[in-house]
Image (cartoon, rainbow, N blue to C red):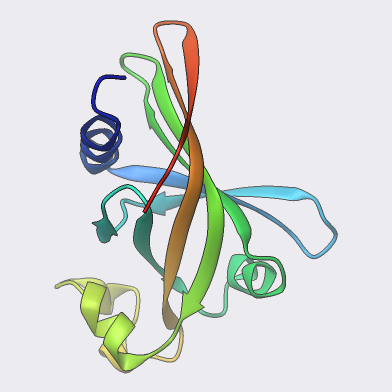
Length: 140
């Protein structure tokens, strides 16, 4: 990759969904389709919205290790980011990524107790394209 930050950032921004993988309470891997991250800080930090009552949130509170996977099926390319997830429930975090239309999922609005933010912080990644993989570290 010539420009790691540009390649990964643009790739993530173009995908309408991503996949979050984590370990459940019994140590088995689970994967969930997620809406595109609402916001990102470079290629290190990604913010996603989800339900506080979900099993993934309960599992991530116990074991924050996770992966975010972005895929472009048309060209058979993908990026897997490995890191940790922090569950944020502060008003500031929730307001930061709240979008018009979210009331469909969280009827009580931005203060809905079943609305939270997942802050994914990447440590490393792997890019797959043209039948080749390339590992990369993520610096601050």
